[in-house]
Length: 220
Image (cartoon, rainbow, N blue to C red; front, side, top):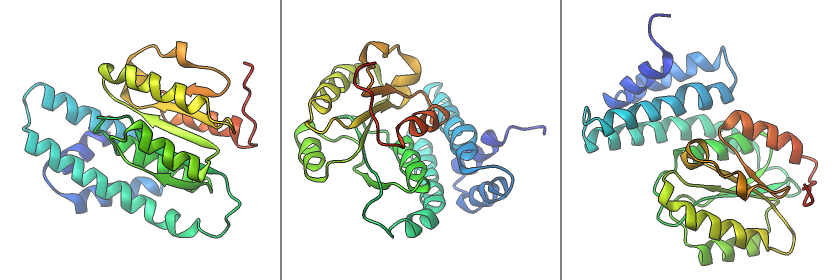
């Protein structure tokens, strides 16, 4: 292979060729699991586009075009799983949200797709959710797991505040912290048996396997 698949995917997104991006993903989906597409194609493609933007090699409009195209591809991947997973109200539940003022959301959408494929009931609340509004929704629905995402270092105080608030909920849900902030910075001081820092979707699968029985170890 002379060119990495994620670079080709990124090129299609930057050119507004959503159809070509979908064809590439559909082809890869016949050869690889969905997790491979999320972890090894879509995520590095968006990081690659971010680097191009930081170097002023593409414009803000280009980046927005690519993000919208990627959103479309992820939603299309999720559609079949989404339709097939509303059969039982007894499935485990997860709520996913971005920290207050955090605008990045594609990673959250991929995590939502991952959990739907695993058979969970998912509430995807999107980015930039204030703590009081998040707590209202969480207390009403009482999920088994809460997923919190952030990208930039100056979101860390808000991530800590939200994590502490979620940790005090009476039914002790599992808490996942992810996003670019988890990859770039050492957040190990936030980890407990109840709180896990996840640096990628491969690690997310490991955490899912630990928690799928519904047991959160609050002592470790």
